Image (cartoon, rainbow, N blue to C red; front, top):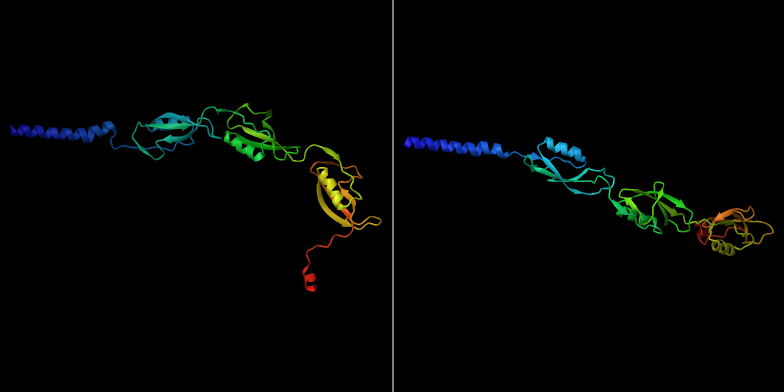
Length: 257
């Protein structure tokens, strides 16, 4: 009787050991793990095939737009790359959308170039080429274009679109003849130049007979030739006389003093 009990007990222990140490681990893959691969940058199709070959499942849990990223590209995953998981574990993927989202184009008219670039980026668009157009408003947006199509505030534009900007060159379109400055003093000439929306260029001195010292001899561009200028252009002056002595003395002059 005792022998039978001993045999039964022995087989029972062996059975339990086989069940818990061999059969159950095999059945549940106990102790077997897989390393989660790095899927970022793969297309959804590539990532799906890659996971399935490694006995892992997958599902999409999020979609986010990323500038310059192609559609249906993996941008993040959970569990993360390098994590240890069991076979048949589901890997959740965040991907870029198939089509970029549409946004309402912002109002960029009369906005400075630097501000317009920041606004475009904040709307998920890309600042494109910059073209300058004659206008007194320097570096201020006058027009916005997508390819050969002009766009305005309120238009529907896809994120990621490159937007070209037309801005003012600060000089304007008004063209006129160079004002007559010959015979004026430097102060009078400067007043006439600035009053015409022009700029004073370099000033040179030259002796000329029968001409009052300190008055304008000629200019460039020239009134006599009928030269045409535009607002913001520079006018160079030649005055009768010798170049004024500088207020700064040379080393030799300092020694003499």
